[in-house]
Image (cartoon, rainbow, N blue to C red; front, side):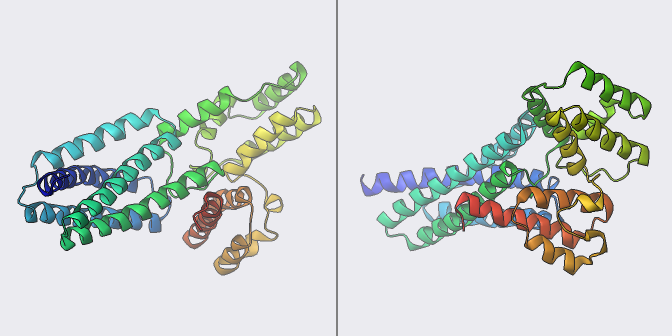
Length: 321
């Protein structure tokens, strides 16, 4: 490739990166509303600000090469982000994150290409800009990979599902649940529900948010319905059904304190609870503690510690440590 062609290619790649960066900014802004904790919310806001700084650096590099940023770029970035945000409402949570990961990988790969082109032209300033991009997008790729691993491990994830994503994910799971109840088991379980409202449909509506929406208040009778249904199911040998009810109780924070994986949890202060959570190695156990914490005390320090513990396990599983 001639020097002139290399310069032309470099300029074209920088313009594409500028447009994609604008899309990245808009997506980061939409993700802020999905942050599970204040720490994640601040991190996403900072990421959006840093992306704006990178966009300005790319624009400066374009001008240095004698070009001018295309004014339509930011508009296309906002449009692309809006289309993505609308489209992913009908997608499962993991598919939406995989879409974010595709964008970050494209930015990372183009930044590496830009660095090689700038090195060929011996343009140290553009090489430095490209290295900043490589560092930033490598970190974002690792973060998204970790969030996906957290989701695969059952959560909690740094990001919450949107309501539509939660329903979509629950529908997929329900389709794949094998029906193993006997007719007698079903009759007895339904009798239990009829005897103590809310109805099954309302419980399933609450269950659609399992793992992401902590149920703050439920009447004692409702707690008893779930607990009794689990006991009846086990008594009838319907272990799969009992397991599903137990899972619902776990993810909505309705377990009894004695059922938690940390002994005497209700009596622990924030520092003690955080220390106990750090010792947990099973993400499912962390998830149970988090759901209980969100449903009863909602101490931000404890919630953040639970998120950080699952994140550490996810990074290890993904080979990022």
